[in-house]
Amino acid sequence: MGSIVLYMSMSLDGFITGPDDGPGQGLGLNGSRLFRWLDERNTPGPNKDVFDEAMATGAVIAGRRTYENADHWHGDHHDGVPVFVLTHHPPETPPPGSVRFATDGAEDCAAQAKAAAGERNVMVHGAGAAQSLLRAGVLDELELHLVPVLLSQGRRLFDALGPDHIELELTRAIEAPHVTHLHYRVIR
Amino acid sequence: MGSIVLYMSMSLDGFITGPDDGPGQGLGLNGSRLFRWLDERNTPGPNKDVFDEAMATGAVIAGRRTYENADHWHGDHHDGVPVFVLTHHPPETPPPGSVRFATDGAEDCAAQAKAAAGERNVMVHGAGAAQSLLRAGVLDELELHLVPVLLSQGRRLFDALGPDHIELELTRAIEAPHVTHLHYRVIR
Image (cartoon, rainbow over the protein chains, first blue to last red):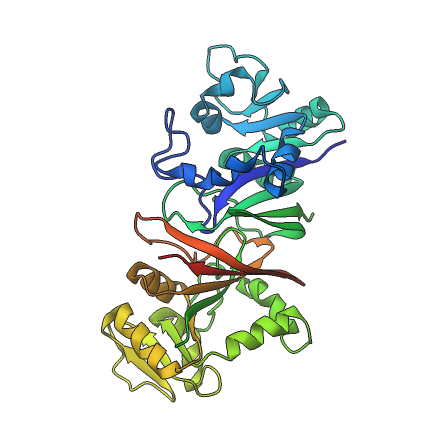
């Protein structure tokens, strides 16, 4: 089976959005700074390679906030793969397209997503989902797109993880235009 | 003249100490995890190279908290170079050894340290000094020893920097045992 992999762009000071993120401003104020490297996602080179890798995943896990802020991806994150929205309080409206709500916790959500992805990896997106999966011990890898900027404000990727250290192993580092792609394995 | 360079070990989630740092426990609870790479500071290899670079600096700037938590370095941080402690409230006891208190703000402190270091770089150490110098626009470079662990708690290196983005340029990345050394230039 595949691995459960967090893919996130993060500023050197740990932010994944600017301040005041919400529906209509999913990246927060000036948060689009973190995604400049994606301008090269269709240009042959390391940024395209890493982007293509993310888009080759067979399922997506996201938290409720990310889901709302991204306007539900209009029901399709990429290629129609199933999207699992980890939430304790699913909205009453039925989820669009390939989205489904996972209400039985992080471990169950991870198992469902792995089964759905088959041999492909599962993409995790958003701080809430990342933290839930890390706390539950079911996140396998992290691909962080480390952006050379200090945002100073916004939403932090890593927060409220509990008192225990989580040990990682760097398995790949790619210097690319506007970004450093760092891939870690979670050590259990 | 040399550059003003921040040297800090930081967890992937942005912490430079464990929780409850203070005199007698300068690294915080279990914060020594961040300094494992220094076990190789005397073994030929990239960790020694980076450590030697830091020790070749001609002056040190630190904040008051770092100064206290490090037990004043007994008056000598390394090789007797002058240590400037950036503080608004100097203690009444005279500073030991090569330590002096800089009470006229970050810009003045930076100028003094640069003059003292001559052609060598100035080492900045600690979150308080880093933040003050960044806010004042007088930090030139950052050498971050990025440690593959999520500490989850402790003191953050980057905090309270104000609303403006601070743009950086990655000038060097070194994969080394137990750590990734990332060197950035502050873009002004």
